[in-house]
Length: 215
Image (tube, rainbow, N blue to C red; front, side):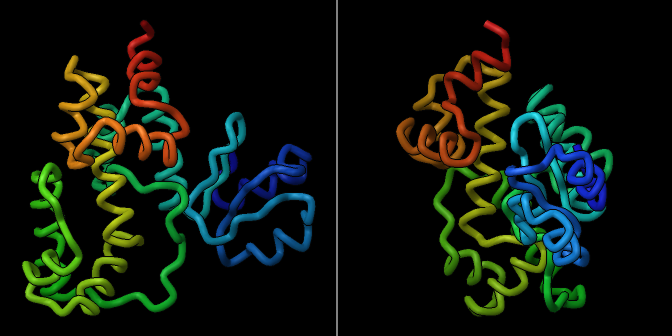
């Protein structure tokens, strides 16, 4: 694992030749020039290429480590560590690592944070961008801007990641059916649950449950 500029060490050793990788955005151009054989992805938080992982800066390095912890010990363990560290419990590696124009913290941001906490407690319900913006007493455009500042991603991607994280916890700790879990987390059907697992995690819910429990 090469965290932040640790990707340079892995590339220098030839471990990233022909493979996707990332590093801190500020030195992405230098990395690309020095290691043209690496498939650099300069705009993501981290890249998991199986036995080799790379990440962007410090916060993204934490995201990458939580990702590994989640794979090895499950979503609940990763979430407990994230809560203790007071960081986001799950950010997908494909999220953007760099916000071009950060916004100052405002009362609107605090109100939006409270709404995100409410959404996490009600993932089984449908949540449209317009409905959330109205709940936050913001225009659609303002809500979208503040949402990206706080989460680093879009409403749709954030919702999907939160629902996947909850589905993982239920698969690890309960014997509920795929249909029940899909409804609980807001995907609606087992088919939709399987599609999201395949697209994001590269596996199926049943395989995830079996591999996590070792049965």
